[in-house]
Image (cartoon, rainbow, N blue to C red; front, side):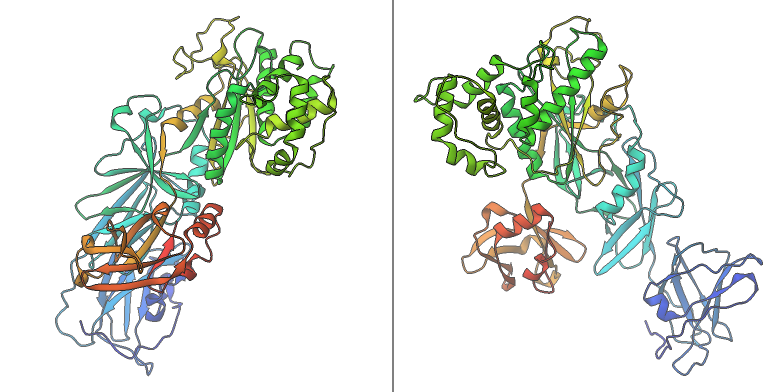
Length: 610
């Protein structure tokens, strides 16, 4: 289509009555955010003035612009080179996009391509429209097709509408995980009271997404388990959804919490000492927390119903504190439980010593499971124990070789018991604790809370702790209502369970390397594209997903040599993608969140992302 040439870049604001505002095409083309100057002197309007390079008015030019509501307006400039659009008020910053114009003096109106409308609705897990926490903020969605990339705000009904004449389908995702978290945090602060099985289900037009580990992910429920309290789910990266004019899309943003249930015998009656059978659970927890460092940890303690409410609340909190001390290798906190100031039934002594000695010397046939045998083992392995300790053995000491237990021996015994493989989290890990006492006993299966359990019962499975991992961009939601529960009617603990997926029921994809390359239809269909390790002929992926004008490949780190250089193949076409890189180093950077330098590995038309 012929365009007016030689337009002068000149911004003007009209000061006429009725609050009319003039904007030149240079600003429209750059999608500038313009301050509102609407006057309350009558019907508001937008004024557009078109001038040529000599400052002369361009008369009779057909003009089309896109307004903040996503709709387009068009008209012809008058004898002063002006086009006025009435009936619109622009409050705050307004995004006005110049689309196109024709040569002046054209008698016939041009036949511009038909505009297609794409609608995406954003709801929460209950199906309610997602609204930002304040009226002056917006929930932005990103619409992509070809080289076009547009941010569109959702309205008060959670609907974002995008129109274009350039595409039959568009890829839609959110502006960013951080921006989405900011919108969802106040919504999820309140208890909702509905378990996952009652949430909006995913189907052909609805995609369920969550926030986890600094990313937007897609949670896919196993159809065979959707009727259970906590369905089995798989997390996958969320690359967006394809929307078409005849297929409105719904995105349901749902909270995701991982619950690590500590199974087995965890505590003796009236004690907060962490029994040996709990160590495997701790290793599982620490492995998960180290893999997903962008999480906040909440430890919730429980008791059976064999004492009164107040006593059990204190005991449940003591159990969470003992668990947290174990995770941080805080031996001094544990040693305090041997003190004479502790209640006799709660005080630690020979029983706890023997638990630890037997655990440490399990399989060590050269040493008998006595205090003397432990001292001999400790001294013989002191160098190894120091080296693997988080503090490099700052508190390790050589023990006297006698058979008596003393303060020094007990402190070293606790250090060794805590210094098991993969049972320590880094200093500074955000951990909160909450004691629920006897208020939430479990059913016989251990799957649900059963508050009909009679009082005065010694039930081992209720002497427990549970650990919840929350996305750090959101924090613990609903917030912890204090260190100790307020009673059986507390809403927060049931809500954490409602939102939780059991770790043993959760499949999380391994770290992946995402490679984006331009898609050229002349080189073949997406299935014709392959990624190879350069110089070896090794195929690493031929499963690219088209997103806009690019193909996205996800590569398994385990299939990549170190170092590695990738090569794109498409029919007879071959091209190196950037420089050689180390997959090991990239994985470390991705895990730590330090991705700033990854772009240096790639050429201008390809990139790497997590």
